Image 1 (cartoon, rainbow, N blue to C red):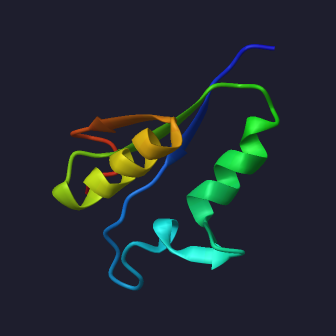
Image 2 (cartoon, rainbow, N blue to C red):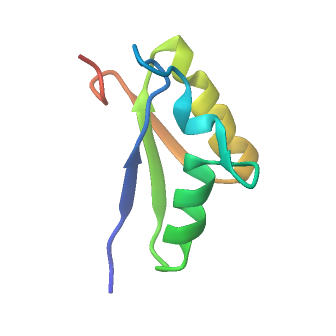
Length: 78
């Protein structure tokens, strides 16, 4: 099987900004849990985000965890 998993994330939100990096279960964030679960599929996983300054923390998270992240001018932008 070949394929690619793309997780989209951004940190700006009007209701709960930064929620994807907040610890929600056993000290793990939503992104930690998603990557942990999806890794078992054996497919490459890429974190897609925006080039907005606030989303730099997502790229930093990915780099720290050894994951790939791609930021684009059109990814998740309004």
